[in-house]
Image 1: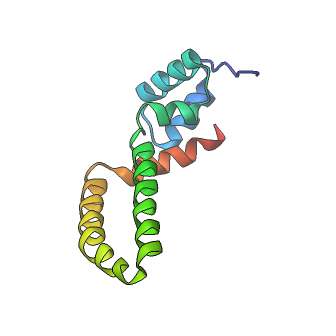
Image 2: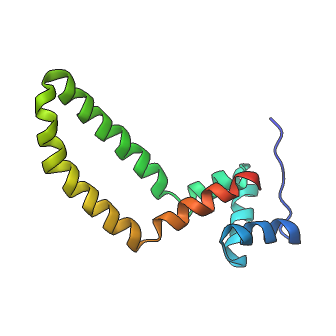
Length: 115
């Protein structure tokens, strides 16, 4: 497998990472980490600053499991699950995500796709 080595002094690369929403220090750190682990910039961001995205994917699968298991057993019980657990969980998640600039992390992660 061929690996692209990123040049830490490449001004256009640093500028494109800065345009995604990161500072110059974080761009340098991200390039260093990507070269060290032999991965691309987007994956390096996922492993360093955006690790919360992996947790949300796991939470999505856990919630899907509960929803599917309840709906297979008794579909009429699904409303109670959504009412009690779903609304409380949703309110807590939204509060935490807005507080920690969660949507900004997703925006940077998506913008780093082409770098």
